[in-house]
Length: 327
Ligand code: SF4
Image (cartoon, rainbow, N blue to C red; front, side, top):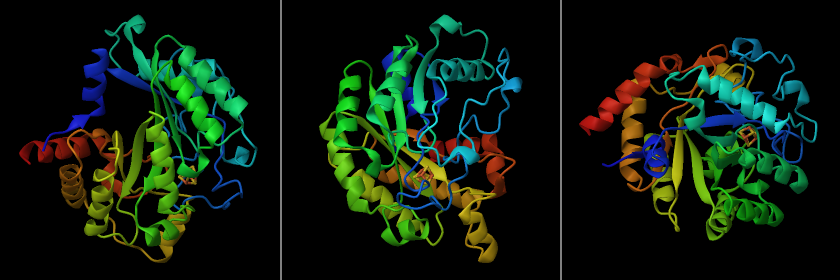
């Protein structure tokens, strides 16, 4: 088994580590604003993405950031059409957050970034608005790639034209939240689109030359190991082939529908050992060329109900890397 991690991939292109700047597009999500549903996917937290890294970090805790206005939407803003904090302010804020976590030996002038519109559905908005924020993001010289997380039912032909246009300036990645190929699970988690919508959008994006990364969740309620492997086999057989994958561990977060479901009728939660086995088997199924963007996820500590072992992320990654090496 050969694995290309996102770090390996980016280093091979840019010769250096590339950092991710998590940004808000100001867009909401049709699964939350009432177009499809008000509830959202059952696992989705109020911030629209379980691993939104700026979630819950007061600006005052980030070195040299004095601004007191929240840059990001909060739960009370969810039903606005979209709320757009200034992209440049967000970029600077996110760069300071990165700087607070990395070695000061890496000069700021040498740092390269991916501008990542992470929360909610980053293409669910008026095209003029999308053009403005995406263009602002890639206008920053240190940004080498534009990455946008979204749903497959939120990419209009007009939006696709825009993505193609921007892709000629800097690489554009679209990250599609698929989570599972199984329709019964999709119904249970209230994903609110069928698999053929993913297939259609995937084909349109790939035909347009856009890099596509798919998000999958391991440990969804009711799914067996074999169900998860079937999802991986499906992705492995996509044509044209998939560019990248993010494997997420299912997190049950306070305040979500999933937390209510779990409290009412607890379902199986994978142990660390089981998760490692499943991830290694998934990696074995995926083609060697698929870039592995993630092998687990970060659940916000203050919200996490299960699995609590995931809080020790260092241990999880060490154990995963050891298992991969041994395999
Ligand atoms: S599509 Fe994404 S943002 Fe919308 S409810 Fe589901 S997980 Fe949350």
